[in-house]
Image (tube, rainbow, N blue to C red; front, top):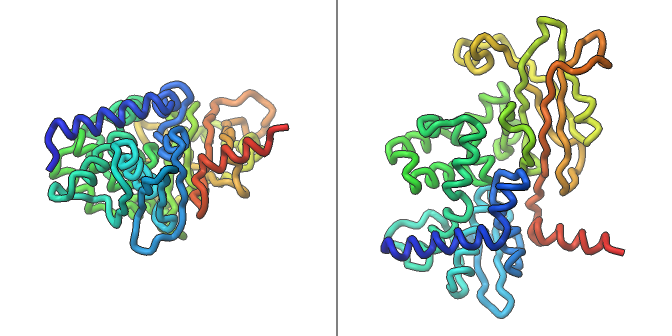
Length: 338
């Protein structure tokens, strides 16, 4: 078990790295919602490679040229947390180490517990969680709801399970509520959003509303996004997606069956009806943020000014085998130079 002094040292180190690497500025000023551990590694000249690793989740190689190996065949949120954990070994001065798990109990060795605290402090700091909560209008009580926890996890770029334990560490979620939330499977939440069987249980489903405007969201290339807009079809307005299609998105209205009382409650609030639009990239998305814009216009006069607009940006991340996305981006920038 770590002492309070050791925990503070690991968390303070993570806070310093967030400032020095520009990760905090990226959220505070640029409009992103999450800390990208691959960019943190890139800023410290640590090479990150993703590849199949059999039983291992990841490894830190403490040689002259430090490097990190991450199992590419794990879910995206676990890949991100693994990278943060291995960065903990690097920044805290640990030697070469391998990790088959990340859920270390208090009986684990000091190095793993320190890297564990560093990872959670780097990837899910209190200020980043608070920023998302303020924007979405979520209270501390809302954090006990599995649906909110899942959407919070997506915006932090971590797994549903990691989001729960992050809040528990920060004393924002009691242990009993954390245990209850862990009994809910993310697949159940995804299916309730799509109102149909899941084609791929590993794909995440984002629900976007007015609070997500003017951000740069970072879904994975296989993720789907639902944009929820107020529905004014009763007075002749319909959602139009021409602007979004021009940026390489496919957008489809979600036609739901006659809702049961529980489902209807999620679609009608305060007498306001909503319409969901399913959004996904039409082809291999660019690594640069793409504009996503939907408008409500008169059905008989699309040239008239829109009643309402929804606008945000999506920067899709491809966690394929090989160099990290951040390293690939640097290489691509180099090839664009004259």
